[in-house]
Image 1 (cartoon, rainbow, N blue to C red):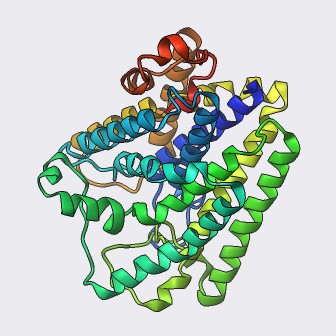
Image 2 (image 1 turned 90 degrees about the horizontal axis):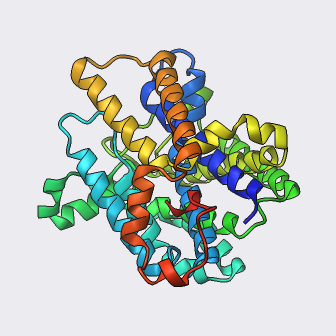
Length: 373
């Protein structure tokens, strides 16, 4: 695995991290006035980018160490650990962030059978899932009253069916639909991400997908701003006209395909940037943050939760709190990566999931820590 490929994947993951932080801390827009730039760039795009990169990592790790950290057993363990960590964070009193880790844990386990599919069937499955799963979910939503879904928490384990329904169907990140992002990541991970031409093709293809979905959505929405409005799913009533919705986290076909296009575009851009040595050095701190996103996401969630405890009155957000967290966490990641390489939670996750026999029999993975998340 080449250095430029590692930098590209880590850089894309770092962008996803700061984008998610911006979605949580930046200025929110609910339909009045002009959408803030930060909201346009991050809301509904950062989390799908993370999901797609999870698929990329599944492919790369399995290719490098199929009997060790890339094995089915190790991946299932990591998925379960992500679910448990997500429930723990969500159980904190008045957690202001909808924690997505439990959904990610379910996703990486759910797509394991697809990892061995040939490329063409996998591509067909990804396309079909991106369209049919959202339509199926819309049909279920139409058949039910609006569902008010809260944060998945530890007490939900006492009601497994309710927890499964929240994570898989009714939550803000319905896993049944978000599988499409991870499937797309499995495909992207099969490409040569050290090739600048591949990066250019990913960038152009992703841009075309994102632009096309917005253009189609515009045909059904007179006000262009509403294409980017924060959606109230799953708490609002829906009907079949919502199949053309593009708004963030609506989990409708155009939203899924558009967010997938944005994610592919970012990966392509990162592949091209990583091939330029001077640029790769310049963005290394952000790539360092991308190599330990589980740790930094957890710190971000706890930091933001603590801020809301001190000031329980919701504000409109802004660039200041976001910039402070970005600078602090990227700086900490840079120092940590320089001295210790793997993040603390990544180290624990690796230790708990890696088969013991791989320590002595498996290939050397000390130079590629970032794709083991």
